[in-house]
Length: 430
Ligand SMILES: *[C@@H]1O[C@H](CO)[C@@H](O)[C@H](O)[C@H]1NC(C)=O
Ligand SMILES: *[C@@H]1O[C@H](CO)[C@@H](O)[C@H](O)[C@H]1NC(C)=O
Ligand SMILES: *[C@@H]1O[C@H](CO)[C@@H](O)[C@H](O)[C@H]1NC(C)=O
Image 1 (cartoon, rainbow, N blue to C red):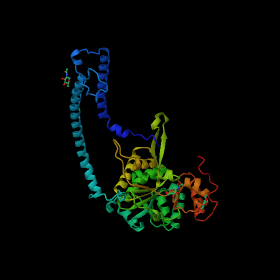
Image 2: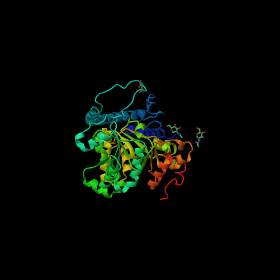
Image 3: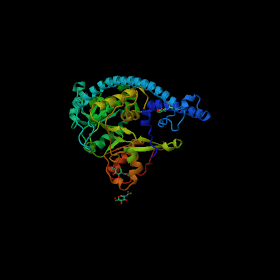
Image 4: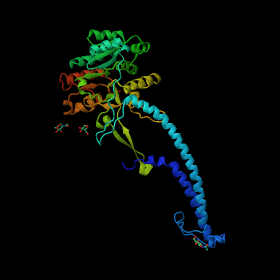
């Protein structure tokens, strides 16, 4: 905790101090020469100069030397010249900066007015809060009247659970919607990627939305595995959000034990479950990186947080939210990347040279209520107190044997079968 890097303020002054130190070095060299000559020629090289020695130059030369008068003059000239030079440089710098700020300010001010509308006074100490609940977008229902009709029927207070599925995942989907029906959630819809799964939903009284034929969706939807479908969902989500609905995006390897809408804060653009497994990893911590070779500054502090789970998050219909969906979808169409990594990078990386960060507000869900399967199988099932708590959902995200673990979760939490979770190993054996 001691050796925190303090190079910030030093860096800012380097040009200035570099300049100063050059002068100082020049003076120091001059003085040293002077002292050497004074020692070798105590009466001076130029005798006239030896008659009257000024003792008033202590500020420049700590010990009196015979050449100090001359040095003083030289120094004064040098300083004058470089001051002039510096002054000129400073003026140019200031001008450039003014031009840059004017350009930036124009743009920034315009954006601020767009977002905030008006200026506010800050208010007393301790009462000031930044904006995290962004205004919702103006819905454009003309974009997708068919989806609007479905949502008007299904959504509750303009909120809806959305899952994307193809017929490869039929059994898992069944466990998913059965758990949803069990806790009497009505505002959910399955986005069907093929006709077979659409029919399966309809025959089970599950609200379903079959998208209009779309080349990309059709090719990925029919053949795609898990990851391909994951990338798709960001494009699909956009359709919902543009209509002004808040979406709780849900993978289907999830068992619902309570109604999640009773446990949301709704104060952020994105509210997501975490892949973390305790307070630190879920909510963030200072991970100190140690580099002994740096001595006094051996400790570098880093900010860490386990990723948000892009398989279960609540997203409000705001500009930053839509920007997030677009950024992730755009990157996934260009790069062969894991959608969850991209989702987190876009959410968390700050603006920096050459990059404009997203700046969406975000909230991590309680990891005991919105529980991942690592927390369940590594911690909760072995802890007498924790295993008595009733989570809102369990996401079997950490284990490939999804179906049997989901079924065991239902046995344990719904049917009270105390040993239902016992025979599974903590992790998978590959
Ligand atoms: C020495 O300098 C002082 C002050 O500058 C001056 O009053 C004095 O006349 C000078 N003496 C000689 C010998 O030049
Ligand atoms: C984790 O955080 C919660 C609330 O933020 C707190 O009540 C709890 O004691 C913490 N647990 C540990 C082990 O620090
Ligand atoms: C469970 O809670 C009780 C009461 O708060 C406490 O005494 C006990 O140590 C806890 N057990 C575990 C395993 O944490």
